[in-house]
Image (tube, rainbow, N blue to C red; front, side):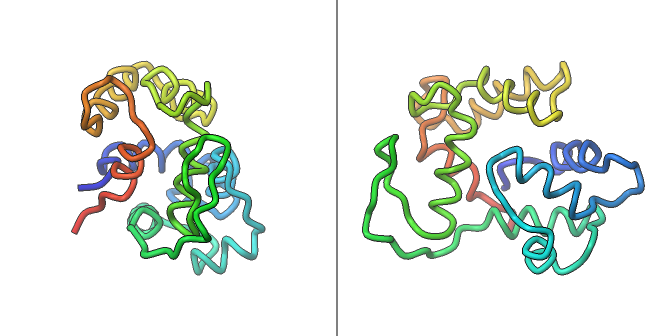
Length: 161
C-alpha cells in the first residue's frame, strides 16, 4: 500500500505535465520539488532520475523509490525547532516535508493544512476536500483527526510490495 493511490498519482502527474505531452520533464518535476522545499540543480535531478523526462510508469517508479524506507544513520540525534530528531537521508527529508505541510508549526497536519498546501502546489480541485479528510483519517492511528510526525512518516514510507 502506498501513501497515495494510483488515481491520486495520475492526477498529480497530469497536473505536473503542464504542456500535456504525456511526459513530466525535469523542469516540471523540479517545480513541484521546489514548492515542497527540495532544491536540486537540473544536473542533480537528471542524475537522480536518469533521463530528461518521465512517462507515467516512470513517474510511479520515481515516486515509489523516493517513498521507500531507507536505513539512514543518525547524525547524532540533533533536534530541530519542532523538537523532532533529525536523521540523515529519508528521516531528514521527511521532517522537512512534514514542516511544509504543518503550516502553523504545532506539530500536526490537519486536513485544512493539507488542502492549503495542495492549493499552493496547484494540485487542488473541489473534490479533493473529501480526499484530504480521508487521507488524514486513513493514517491517523490515534484518531485525533490530524497527523503527527510519526503518522506522517508511516504514511509516506508505506509502499506497494
